[in-house]
Image: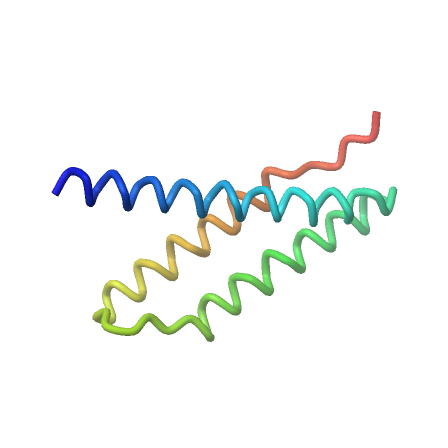
Length: 91
């Protein structure tokens, strides 16, 4: 059982790292616009679109409603945490 748990944790961590890296590259490209207001509006649009998609389009097969609501809530929180961690610091 411990091996299964470790394997799930490893897969979960790998997914998080992969998604964070993709997001970092996307945000880096947005950052290159050179305009703070535009940068912040893009980040907000990404956040709102991702959360809307999670809320309306995500369907988990084989799970009860409570699990689906919990996963959607946690996924939305991850989106907000990741995207709000980016700031526009032009040095």
